[in-house]
Figure (cartoon, rainbow, N blue to C red):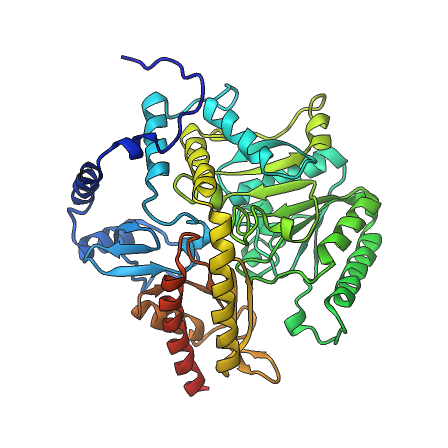
Length: 477
């Protein structure tokens, strides 16, 4: 019998609270048995025979067959436990097996799994309000997407429609996605297969002070320099031609590069001067990762457009979006929004998003990140002091990178930009994996960004493994 309409969103953890733990465990174990009829070798063989794996040469791959996970840990089909020190792809903020989100997805599935975006969906309506409630007071509406790349695609399209301009600025040391528009926004080597690029995409330099040859007396002085060079470049490109400046608020995979004091307000001022939209890509640093709900809150700026994904559902169902200012939202009252996706605001994804944001609130995740983030900062600062191979550490909340060098004095990177023919960094990551410390590297940086539910004791236990591997790298240097 069909269920009747609901008058409001149910608490996503209502079922979890009323269900006996033994019953939940029995159901979970039954589901695991059903999913793991094949052994590890069979799963890997089938996977490699029929799947193309991203960012990899396909020959020689050895993917880990995963059976399940709980909290900061996940398990292979042989029962081995691994610690997720990168939150998978810096998206699994609540960790594995978060029952309130699982229950919310199930509950929505029992109502309806999909309805086209032109209809009014309760999960989408409720989640949109929750997102706007967490944004600065200048923000107006949300356009939901499937993930970060298409969030950025639609953000630049909206900026171009709103301003009537065509050019878009983004930084060299950035990653905004691998679809065609987002890939042209991207500045690092993953953009190369898309070149020659789309006309009108302009790159500028990051304030990457660790490798800056100019010696500044303060962060503020460095910010003034970089902002002035950006302004100069905009003038040369024609300010009335520039629709948007797009920035990862905190550069993510390319090294967790935290902007110096005054930089983002300076960019904001330049954008205001010329009527350019400031777009903050919060796909990786949003949703409590930095100890604030959004990364830009650390720098006292209000963007015109914010893109998000990853932590909105912690990856339980794909979801992204771009939030636009009230002025932009009002513009589209009388102008057609030329954006559309079949799965925009997917009901299952939005139900997962509601539960995820409620989990952040109920479990006081922001407070926990501030506490454990201080522990991570202390431990990484000790690594910097101790190891010859560690040139720099950058951390904010539970978002961090350990940068490896050949020489601390010259700051020569352990591997060259875009080149690691000997596989040095994959080798280091493999050594960590042998100790069940699971993360990834990019260029000469090791990313450390565990689930936001990690405890201080768990953090210390895992960082000791990184300390051990870095000691081996020191010996080899």
